[in-house]
Length: 573
Image (cartoon, rainbow, N blue to C red; front, side, top):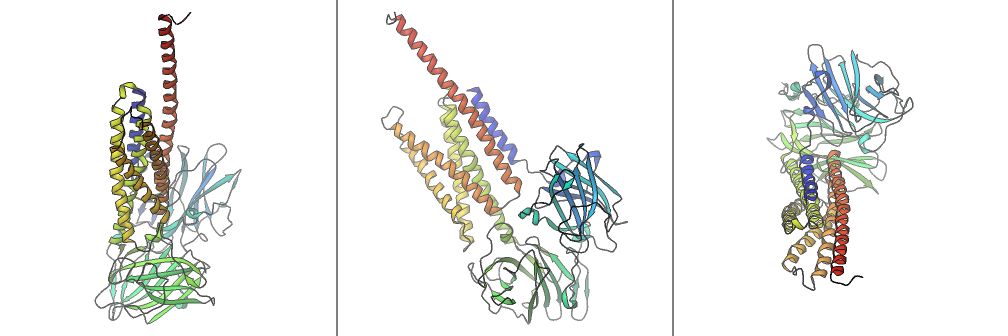
């Protein structure tokens, strides 16, 4: 009884610790008392960047921390002062050498087939060192002198790959490795300050510095820009106060000729329905076609049509082999400068735009834009929808994915202890009832999310969820028909009860992973749940072995006791 109780308590304690183990990048403790006032948890590759910016001499002390790697990996972090991609990036690199020492160095990137050869960067790096910590992370420390000028915002990239001998091999080309880039502003206090506005007779010029430099065709220039938070996109514009119009350039990178791209304003709402879109894609004739499309349905195929406001000019171009830019002039609705904006990309098949992905960044591409002030913030509706998705996930992981298996373990392993009867039954019922109640709440949030997202279908996840709810409800009502232990039908009821129970647990785990793929959170959350399952699995293995040990031991004792009793009564020679 004591061992089983301790193991069950350990399971619960581990789950509580795991749930509270989410660590913010600002809480990292560095060696030698180093401290940094700013940090960003980078969205992929388990990395974070920490820095102190010195405005008087335009230098930055940085710590680039790359976790979940080993001594046979190299890591790199780079700034690109002249572009937004790999070519032209100025990299800080570190790897663990054969003797166990960590070697940091600088490497300018001039080719996609680079071997990260050592060389001088386009800006000075007065200080550079690195360390290998806990056999799982490399931290690069450096002081860099930012490129001359006034810019403090740059494209940055981060990466890791394998080391073979003395050669640094090419990094993988999977999704996280090809999307490990973004924009960093070393002076966030300046970025947070109110934008500077200069007014002429017709145009308000709003200065924002959170986009990498870009040269547009035909000498076009735009005084304001926002780096959109997802889908590798940027919005550039000039706002004309006199007639409430705006010239925009929507730049969507990381796409191909078989993709469509779209950017939209919604003057009347905060979601997809009612959005007024600018669309561009290569049609069946091989021409890049730019047009307008009002969105009236979640199942839209982006049919061409007039918008609720005038678009006197629209055109598009495909450049650098991986980005589409839409240029347009919009006559904004009277008196309004702040709108919900949406941006998106998807595949083109047979000359027709097809549905975009309905998970990950493709469902987060929404925000608010103020053309007069330059302010760009996440949309309340998008945040609210994401919170509902997160709540749905947490409720179902805790209920179906944790409490339900723990309740089954209590019934399976505690009842072998005579002193645990009937306590094991009440623990089992408490865990399963709690799991069902919380699970129904999670199921309800899923139904609500589905009704709020007409046209967005996750059929496998939905069907498994409905099946789980039905089986869980069946289990609850089956308790009302539970025969007494000595009833002739109790044996068959036990078979039914256990079969349905194990089916629910198996389907629950499968559906949680299906939901994680849809929600697409940071990798650490999926890894955390995998860790919980591994821990539960180890506990099951240990408790199963111990249970069989007790059962066999008791059978031997009972047999010996029966043997002795018969001998005393004269049945043994």
